[in-house]
Figure (cartoon, rainbow, N blue to C red):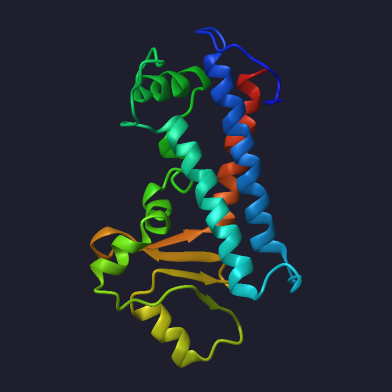
Length: 197
């Protein structure tokens, strides 16, 4: 689909971005599927369950970040090859496919991705006194569960509720429900496929 030689023209540029978005939706859905549906973890590949879950969470956040860069990019960079600004392109793409990004609040929740990408800034904000890489499940003792949920932790995955929890700027707690995110990804994929038929 994308590995063909292709000269980008004004006529096909928008379709190129739609196709790239579809690939990123696939990457995000693969990651969500592994996170939500894996009962056993291959210990030959993943050292422990923390490595497993946060590997897929990081991939999921990167794919959603790429989608945000395509459809919700008020800034971006401009260079000599670009005919339109990233903002103009994003706006035109959304209009072309009838996409309202407000209908997809989890896909376009940039703060979740930014916390993961800029974890060093969050560490600094908390003077390096913040927990990280927690997993909560049915075996987590109540005292530890309360400590994780009631004090700042940078990255936590609650397996029982299937929610990723993080903190944004100004110590804002963010909950990122993965089942709802998957529904949004599936709906956006359908919308994009309709736009290229």
